[in-house]
Image (cartoon, rainbow over all chains, first blue to last red):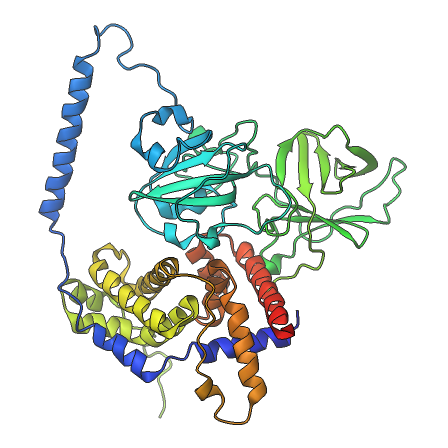
Length: 336
Length: 187
């Protein structure tokens, strides 16, 4: 892409965005037509809260009174979200098509607008940018395609190579189910706790969900800037074709590591999901070495490099585990 | 005129708190003063996001209504401009969801073709078609950057993603726009 094209786009956008006087005046005039402001008296709000608390207390009291004896456990042990069984019979599950296919996870989001904190790899979905609470249903990987519900194009990702972490997801906001196809649920978090992002010291409640099929985003030590130590074979001879470097900080990509094999192959260590648009499959911070993995005999900084015949990813064995670094479909990446 | 070096600096921008407080009390003129500096660019951005001047104007009017009625939820009065921008983005997104996609962007050819710059007219029309075929996320990204002129950090806050992600998404949005433009151009 040339800078010239970007300049032409900028010029076109600025021309296109120049409103005509009549439209602008019409918008100005609409201020006069605004209805009187609805003000919410604090007293009424407090009364509402008090009523809700009272109803909840009465309900809980009634429930306790039906339980036999008081010596045993007062309440039965129930499944805990994101186990969908925790919401068995919940009308929200049905409203979000939870009865239409096998459900992998279900949980509540206190605010719909936090969807990208719960699903770090999910693409922009402005319709969720509201304060209202939301109910989330993540379908199992073998769920059939869902029919019905809104499917905003902004929430889907480009069709591409199969990603084992892509699922159908339904997010119910105010009674409206928003259904998304191919949501990458890598790093899904059920409970955000007080911690805005992954951290080694995060409480268990704020840790990512980690069932076998859902890789977690395990933060790694921050990579050093610039080129990394060279990859060497068993005789400590530098590899002429393999090199890795930290992503350019001026683009804000310093959380990534770029590994080149020759000029044709580029792989990413991408814990923040910055390049999900071009990655073949997901970055996996903790996975198993595939049975067909091939030891290249190269190592760097205590890490060993494995390739696979498909060349869709490389596997990096570290002292603590194995990471999958997905291949990029684009080797000429740059930032705007 | 000489200026004393130790004279107190004037604030670059007055606090919006008095206007927000008055508007919360129902003062329409205060609300008008709050939104007036942002109306033109909001209307332009909304037109870009919805792909239509009429839809863009409807969305801004909807944003004005929701901002007016939602003033109580504005926690930091001086953040009014960014807060109002979010209302515009939401209203434009709602407008997009409630009508069919795939229309061709309206272009006021009469304005563009006042001279003999036919190439410019054709390029504008081609860009318009390619831009309208981008998905909402790409259109929003490019609008935040090139129409509102927001820095990456503010775009990242609006989109709820890291700054690096904004940069890569802008890069790919522009690539997709270029590919769409080339495809339209070959027709």
